[in-house]
Length: 151
Image 1 (cartoon, one colour):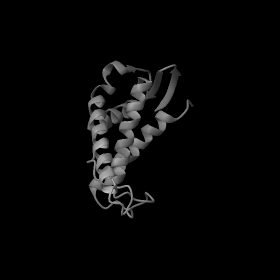
Image 2 (cartoon, one colour):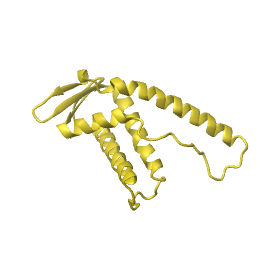
Image 3 (cartoon, one colour):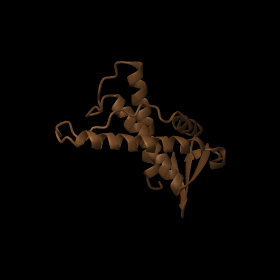
């Protein structure tokens, strides 16, 4: 995947056929992890911390629900055209931002499902962990390429 052109509000990315199918699959599967609990601090004993965490969790859940609704049409057939080496995806700035948010949610969700490892070099001991790790890496790959300047 690479940025082919950017003019005004329109961004065009060239993807080979495999990349296009993987990106479509990631967006179709969104969200691929549960939201989970949000914790500001492990040491905060302020009685209002629980209420703040609850409000944040509710806000994040609502945002995720909105993204889920937007994901359905984000990469529709009208956004793609065939090219000699694959497909070209055209996004306006708003759709690009939504796609970045979805990919980031996928990447961070998988990281959280893996136990928030730091560093990421944790041993993979199950098929589920392998799937989360691969999904996290793929979402990161697309995020990086959406944000990279033209080659």
